[in-house]
Length: 231
Image (cartoon, rainbow, N blue to C red; front, top):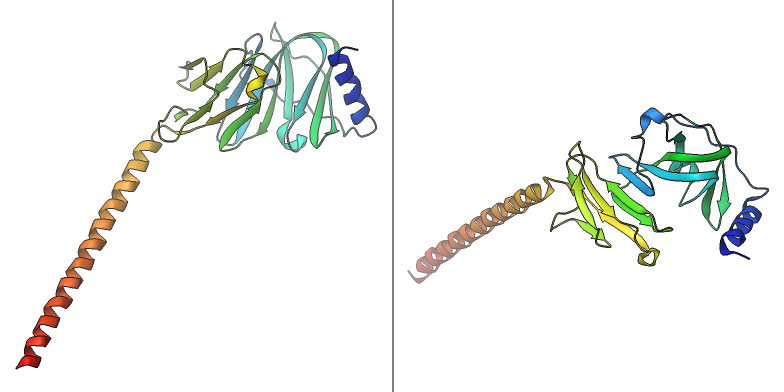
């Protein structure tokens, strides 16, 4: 038996009888569509994460989502190569402590599916297939800072899109890497960090100066007191 068929049967067994209500479709205008072929694009914002994934000639698309599916799989849409919105049925259920999502189409579908996840301070993605991965950071954010930025594994390219957003690209990363991790921050964060430490340094100098001034003042008083005692 093929591994893909075995996995499909196993998933059907695990989710049968425990499917939650269907997921309502979202508005395609909320997403940056179309995407790129054989590519999954993650658009990071301050409050959410939008995923745009390419689909080729499939009647169903499956997703394994960490955490609560109602939080991490919101407003799904499907748009074909001609730009037409395609209807689908989407349902979810638990599997091994995660959420299993299934989007079903009435006929073979080719185009893009997109959905919204909850945002976070860092981006972490488990590599499950050998597609190209794009991570688009929010405007005025960067992951290339020598002090605060972290990108693992090393990307194949880092560029900017037409809006000036930083785009990190992995060309078909090997699933053996396990996870893609991106820690990002505002571009002016290193400057703000410098001013913060500089302010701390000035404050330290002021405190030390005040401390030394008081020590010298006490020493002078002590000398005067010793002179008075000797008299």
